Image (cartoon, rainbow, N blue to C red; front, top):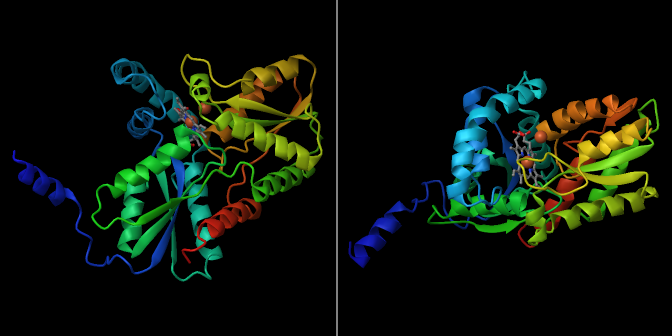
Length: 352
Ligand SMILES: C=CC1=C(C)c2cc3[nH]c(cc4nc(cc5[nH]c(cc1n2)c(C)c5CCC(=O)O)C(CCC(=O)O)=C4C)c(C)c3C=C
Ligand SMILES: [Fe+2]
Ligand SMILES: [Fe+2]
């Protein structure tokens, strides 16, 4: 192939803007992006979701020649069934979807209403893995005349395994567009006063409804493998700072509000202390009542509802604990929406 035919073939692959699209109509798309979730709890949709998720080199950094035989030979033959059973327990049967999708949609719909004073802003929501895909929503926004997109990876604390891969995926979609929009991405908000305030309010409200006052409150964050952190992922520092600021806001001691990391995957060491081991230790030491909140999750999902709300609760009770409460995520609550709205309005400045 000559150089000129190679260039012709390449440029032919770039999408011609759909007739409705004309770059420069001045609309701004706001795209909330969450992690992703399976389309169903059966083996096939679980397999598809886990394959996409666990094939991401930002998530599993192992050499592909080593990882793929493990992924296809071991993980994808066993985990879809096991995880599917867990998803089935928390499934939103009315909408036939996972809570993560229901809550993310609600956040998108409420944000659209809140930005009703901005006629040039279009709000939508997407997933990094699964549906609605980031590419489909990027194309939809461009098709609606957006020549600028504000992406909002819904992770308060930055990690390459979440925030960075959400941004990667958006740019991957733009690679296929000839008239690609300008892009901004909302930065991590782990230390933003509006977020800390929202966590404090929500926690106080939920604690006030309990019939007990927990001796210990745990902020439990999704973990990452320790080597990722050692190589410079700032995630752990962001999590610790969120908890420190929340503790300061509440005026609580370091004994009353502690930090742990949950949802380990695979054999290597992950960030410590582990949530399950900590809860077991507390129970065995005679602590009778605890509450757990998940400040790193924008919405409730399998990891909060099933892992914390069921598995970790059981662990505590088996270890001698008596009273356990799981505090819901901010979700689409007024407190949660105030955070999303504040971040979006700030990042839209100069664009609207
Ligand atoms: C090596 C594997 C994983 C890393 C690293 C990881 C980081 C990470 N994940 C979240 C948020 C979520 N993870 C969720 C589910 C989930 N996570 C992993 C693996 C890793 N996560 C798996 C295999 C799964 C699927 C469920 C399972 O089979 O156990 C979810 C919930 C999705 C849902 O549909 O409800 C969220 C949210 C963060 C924040 C993070 C790193 C900071
Ligand atoms: Fe995860
Ligand atoms: Fe889990």
